Figure 1 (spheres, rainbow, N blue to C red):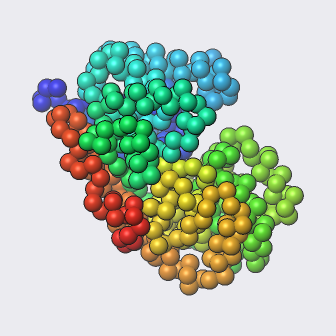
Figure 2: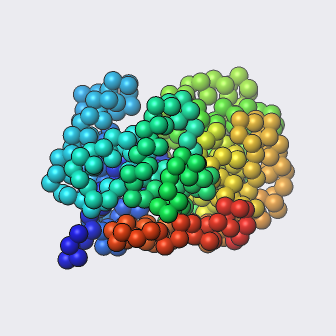
Figure 3: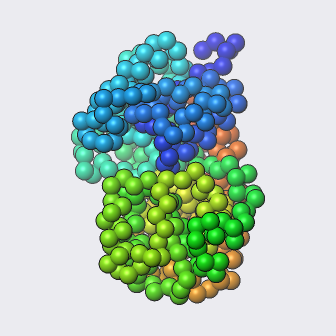
Length: 404
């Protein structure tokens, strides 16, 4: 690469719609561009809701504008959309000649890396952002991923649990690193007017408000949460804010809440762009997934000063440390007990909320995350190993220490 031009980075993903990985890319891409990289985000499915905002911050976004079928509507429609996205990616690789192709999520990893190799992109990077449970259902995919690991210049995990899984799959420790998600903490510095925000949603001013930020997907654990809420029998008034896109199970969840007698306590808010305000009017944050990598929603709740109740999957326990409660996944009884404890102890909620905010500020700032990406990319471009495979502070965090 010539030293008289910016290094060219192409991030390959599915879409820039609203979701955890999507929000992460939408946050880091403009910061990397401002730090001296020529950044392109290549969407294989569709550009998505955040594409315009990202483009306005100095990042090129490419991907299908219109396809014969809506991405995600059906397997056949998704295949057509991905084929269109790969064709656009191939054309851009030929014209733009990136120095690094960085794939996020399994399909962009497998398909995007193949196109990158075909067009001789010099350096290949992959980010794994979830546990590898999906591989158990698709052993053929797992085998292809494990083989592809050997061709990567760098592999990045977003939690210690994911990092350990990658090493078990054969990833080279010298080329495998850990970068936790980072938050733009400025978004959470000015708390909203809780009374006004609650009034806009028709929430009683004295209600205990719980919030879960997760698209409506079975593995996100909404059904466990609804059952746990019914078992907990929280004192009235209370409300649950369900924030996230309905990916097909919304009607089932609403029916479940009706059957269990708590439908009137739940607000189904859909995908939102005012998540910080919604968390700011809440009292308890929730993430009860069956699987995770490292959840943006958890550290967003922490940054908003919420005690978090999380399931012990992925990096959830790493994130909250002593500033929240951790329960086994798929356990409505454990959820109910933890909810009852938090609901009945306001001083505990206050202490955990303060600790959560401090922990988020100390460990999960966007600035620290961007610095780590820059170190990683520079190491790849210079043909050097990562400065340290895992930051010592991150190792302490993974073991449950240094709670901020």
